[in-house]
Amino acid sequence: MSKNEERNRAVAAARDYDPSKVEFLEHEFETYDLLREHLPIARSEVSQGVGVQGGNVGWVLTRYDDSCEVLRTPEDFSSQSMDYPVRAWIPQAIDPPMHTGYRRMLNPLFTADAMTKLEPHLLEYAEKLVDEMLEEDAFDFVAKFADPFPSAIFCELAGFPAEDYSQIMDWKNTIMHANDGHPRGRELACARAKTMGLELGDGDALLPETATAVAGTTAQEVYAYFGELLEQRRANPRDDLISKLLDTKYQGERPLSQEELEDTLFLLFMAGLDTVASALGLIVQGFATSPDKRREFVALMEDPQKLGPAVEELVRVHAIVPLPRRVTREHSFHGALFRQEDMVTVPTMAANRDAEEFPNPHEIQYDRSPNRHLGYGLGPHRCLGIHLARRELRIALQVLHRKLPDYHLDPDQKAVAFGGMKGLASLPLVKG
Ligand code: HEM
Image (cartoon, rainbow, N blue to C red; front, side, top):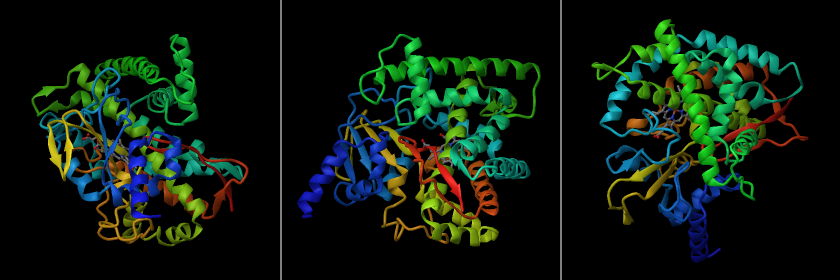
């Protein structure tokens, strides 16, 4: 194909860029490579950012350096980037300097030391789930392990009662996965839209205004639920995040308002339930289709010096988050004119496969060094849950592969992927 034809393909790919569509995932990395080579700062006609309501020009960045620059410059690229159901989430949708105060307050709750204390419990729970999963020769890894492991741990940590677990997952799926190919998310969102008397739309996707209304009403329920739990913990504090949030002070001066408490819990709820599950699903899917890479991992995983870097490399290759930002002032960005209110998407999965930063970017190299990947973000909003996520991934992968070193995709059933903050809704596997 000539350079001109390639460039035209890149222009078309940028124009239609929509990572929330499952079809996009089929040629995701090829598209990012094409864009990086021909249009690294690409203009899209699809409105970018989860739930952003029409009109804004979208840009997609595929170079590592450009991505770092955007994430490190919150004054030009705001995280207040969409219409939030109810209110903006704390701290993810708040810009510095306010954001800095929230992070100072939240960081002590998620330190490496605090998360290390959870390790025996993580190990015990992972072993229980894997043992139950392996009672069958064929099983859905997402339903039996990737979803429940981090989600139940997070609910426990937060202080959400165990009996509310399936309700919590349904709320999360309705809000996060109405329109990204996740079957349960769509089913729940459609059912709710019907009870609200809303129009569904003809195609596969719910009408955007319907999805927004459904997310809004569902979020109201979640907020009411948080309100009740906060009330209970005020009366009877426990050793959980809800009680700790009630105890913390913004800038060491004032307690959080009821709204701030709810908006913080809401973000933790969204971030704590889906992320590790998605990363685990994608990593294990990769292992099921690349037995050599799986065996290489199994051979190194009992060496603590090698395991940490290996898990980082898996997070680089299986990055899940396209990060949205909103341009705060008109300016030229490496030759492109960004106007105020334009949306910029930084797909971490594209930056993480830029050959300028990561030689042989599509290849897993367990000892890759340096490995400054953006899987957990960068700059002021870098993942608050990173120490928990790392421990969950490490322990989950160790326990699984100690008990089941060999497995493959179930030839009779298909894995189901979803887009946006991408992941798998199901991953049918067979032992051996
Ligand atoms: C493999 C698992 C995970 C991945 C790949 C991941 C990825 C990310 C990324 C890319 C960001 C940056 C967002 C942005 O710049 O807008 C982020 C932020 C965040 N993550 Fe994670 N995350 C993971 C696990 C978790 C867990 C388990 C928690 C919960 C405890 C968590 C809580 C958060 C919070 C609260 C933020 C917002 C931080 C801020 O805005 O200052 N994450 N995460």
